[in-house]
Amino acid sequence: MFKRLNLLLWFACCWLAAATPVWAARIELDVLDHEGHGVADVVVVALLQNATATAGAPASRSPAIMDQAGRQFVPHVLVVQTGTPVAFPNSDSVAHQVYSFSAAKRFQLSLYRGHAHPPLVFDQPGLVVLGCNIHDDMLAYIYVTPSPYFAKTAADGKLVLDDLPAGNYELRLWNPRFNEPQAELTRAVRLQTEQRLALNVRLTRALAPEPRPKPAKPGWNDY
Image (cartoon, rainbow, N blue to C red; front, side):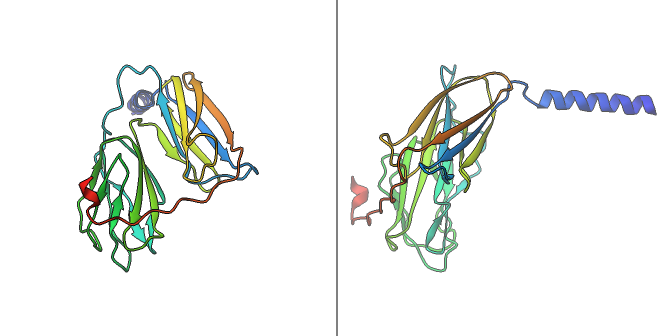
């Protein structure tokens, strides 16, 4: 019996070793404002340079969620990989009319509550700015990236990018309130096999107020 138990344990250890990618690297990132406070909702994308193939569509087709509650979009910033469907449920007590003028995804959902519309596939990379034609103060963003390696900072400005292959990367950082000389911050990093890389990114300027969305115009779908 002990021999059988030891054999089972040996097989379990072999399976765990095979299931854990030995090449996986990790980035731990802190994004700080110019006074040293953490910045929430910063999109961080790791683009693998000189990859043999593009990332393509995400393996999972489960829709991402951009909800509406308390007359706000939830979440305020959503990051998805190119090809991901996004559902727009309305969990609010009032009806909304969601739209986007953005070149990466132009659309308008007719006035609705609940789950009236099927998910939309975001098949072009870029930034999609969302508004509500009924409530002009509603604003949200969907950042669409071809890379499968992305995350968003928590309230303390921290995030982790895990299970990264070794290689050269360009890190891209974006937030609607960045007030830096460039709209996106970039960092070049090189990751070795099983490396754990800790980075701090500190902004040089105070965060700016967010721009406000414009109401949709009649016939805007025509252009």
